[in-house]
Image 1 (spheres, rainbow over the protein chains, first blue to last red):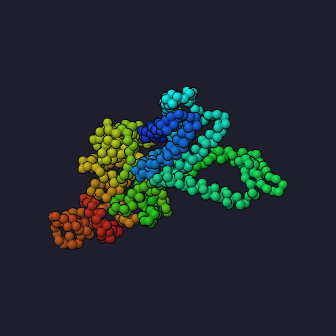
Image 2: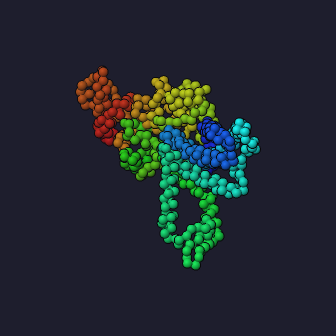
Image 3: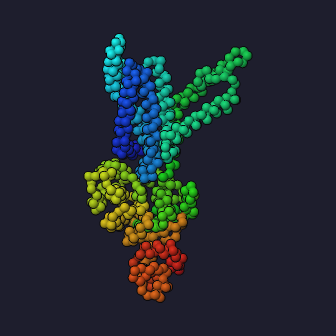
Length: 276
Length: 277
């Protein structure tokens, strides 16, 4: 028997986890749907002229994703903060890796897919209602009719926003992983504590980069992230320092894709050392 | 099977163990007795790998418990004092939890459930605390793990259930299993355990087999003032005095665990002297 990972045992654990938590997960999705209805209704009341424009839909999707995704991630290892549940969790015969992967599958991957499905399911309905509200309002105020608002592709609304939204998603997964790690580190009030700690770490990092590292660097800034450093006022005009291609590629790749997995690795070791 | 060597453990403000050593063998039911807060549950949690020793080592079935390897976890089961059972019907518990335990026996589980008179149609949330505890005990026993740790298992059980508990525990022991029961309800275990380990202030105060105890000590009610005076331990009762004396008859006496426990805690040296001789 493999002590670190066994596919059959992991599938058993996935089944057990789903069976134990399905009610909670389905209720959470229903709550997200309810919040979307409330929010869209609010928009229709305050802005009946154009309640669900494209920009509003995008902001709703991503703001909701960040809020609910991080809240959900901060509850993933909630069991460990309650003694009896923690004992049940830790003594279930599966490895720490299998338990963590299960948390990632449900808390990160399935949450993202389910949230998107719920968003679209409610967006389709609320869009129809919103278009009805809008046409009524325009009719009542004797305005020219407008084409109804269309359902939006929240990932590629247009070519200009495609890359920006891709980065927003990458940031989301990294931030969500911080909350997942927080659910292992903190025993109570994981969401608030992770939020506060995350902010403090972020501010310390910003301070360190600007005040400490900045003092060693020549007066300038990155012209292209991890690729070109621009030095100002050298007397002979601006000087560009080009970093080697391979170096900047690796740095960029790590920043984009490695942050969340790195946090999962930290979570793995934290889970292994968890005591109840 | 279970070896605890020079265990040091403490919580932030309180030291619990400072060099505890213990060896538990298969084929026995160990009674771990002690006052509240003396470290019984902490010891069980260290053995189960839920807490890690700060110093010293623990080996269970050849594993280091703190590593919580699946091969170790599937051969150890713990019934904690405060426990959690997911809210699901009994058959789902068997369907989703039992496959993790290779030696799980469904017939055995069903037999215990019947013996404990647990309604099968109810989910865990619909059951009382005692019923849930009986489900957990039945499940733990049916897992047939080599090590079974039970922390105050009779808490919350009614009189009939306590008697059924003793019956099923006695029936499931074999030479490959080691059962450790921690309790302060000593009467519940009297006829069950075959080794008594008393912990106090994080150290082993007393550790003897029941056979050894009943061969060397006699527990009885005495009306003889001279015998009462010379007893290793005495406690006035409604009729005469309950006493512990040296067993001079040669045969086995009947163990009074509660009296023994009090004697060890209040007058341990006198009792120990019998075993050290």
